[in-house]
Length: 233
Ligand SMILES: C[S@@+](CC[C@H](N)C(=O)[O-])C[C@H]1O[C@@H](n2cnc3c(N)ncnc32)[C@H](O)[C@@H]1O
Image 1 (cartoon, protein in one colour):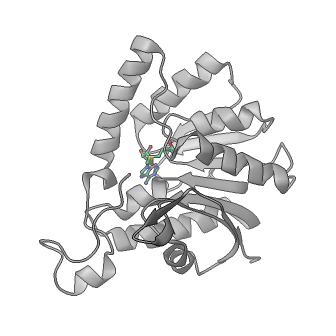
Image 2 (image 1 turned 30 degrees about the horizontal axis):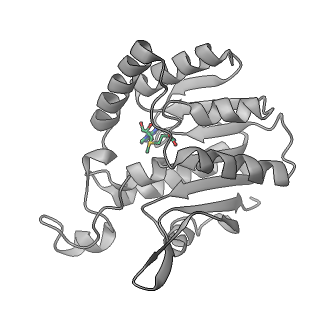
Image 3 (image 1 turned 30 degrees about the vertical axis):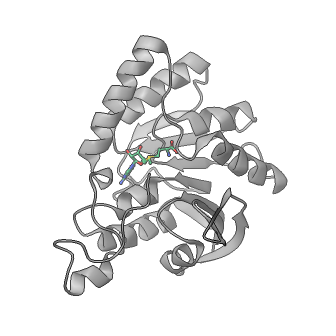
């Protein structure tokens, strides 16, 4: 997801502009993701390709390496928020994790992830259509929550993204156990901005290394990957 332009664009002037760091985009709407995963579902049926892995293969390796380094027990409950095609869950299962759940608000994404799960023979992975901004009561008790690009998408919602980001943090507090870990990968937010977004109830543990680019003699990252820990109640 390209980093959208910041600042006040047309229709963004006035007090609301201070609340919304990004211009709204179709990438923040369910219609967009439904259409995208309808297409990917068709491609999967035609040629067996699971489609785009956001932030590439290395983003999955980075997450799995961190879990392994921390010696997170293989049966810890793990939630992938906005799982898309569910490929991250497949990789986690291949690495030995046994208690995996993926949710996505797009029924087409869940249909695709079910097909990928079937092809890979990973029937124990749980998949469910759920809007993370209105999580069901059964979505709770996770030791690990992972987000790759979903907070980014929600931040681009044309309809009051600031309120949706706040709801995201509330939902996270509902589903993640106290002292549980939250691993987020983002291309829209810098480290400092993410620290601010998750300042209430979370403590940052680690920044995971991501590829660097050099522009005009300055070095930066186009992707930010952070690990937070939920504070004790
Ligand atoms: C950029 S894609 C990333 C997909 C996947 N995590 C990956 O890394 O390949 C964002 C995903 O978030 C999902 N999504 C956006 N808002 C959501 C919400 N409120 N609840 C659940 N899923 C959501 C979209 O349907 C889409 O699958």
